[in-house]
Length: 157
Image 1 (cartoon, helix red, strand yellow):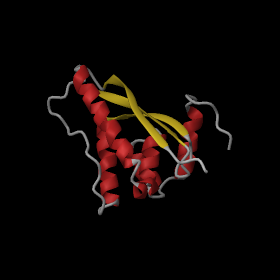
Image 2 (cartoon, one colour):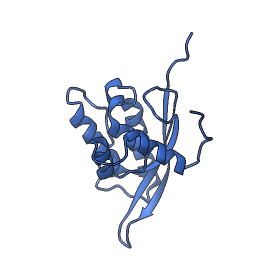
Image 3 (cartoon, one colour):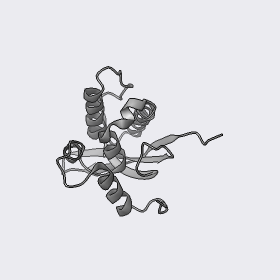
Image 4 (cartoon, helix red, strand yellow):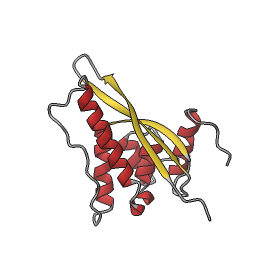
């Protein structure tokens, strides 16, 4: 019996980042481990903030209008990066969102999803790469990020 494909995603390690003396935000580490043929790299870790998750959800929705996307933790006007319960609830919501997204086969063909999960490109760079406006391909971007971050052992090609 052949091995069954799997995609495991973790959203973990929330960290408070200061933008300036008045503003801060929380970013989260997203780690992916998979044997799916859909992914260029089988293991990766990146850091993303809430607004980047919100951007991804909007782009996925724009690209797959007939699909109803999973629930997404709503923007809380009273969210405090210093409130551990707020941060943990958001982290759980973001993880559940990604777990459900990764079970929708049609979304696995969206290069924005792969760039979001496996590179540190910002949303504008992701858009440019996904629409062919960069000198590098999606696979190049993923490979470049994977070789610049050695959290996992080197994969054999």
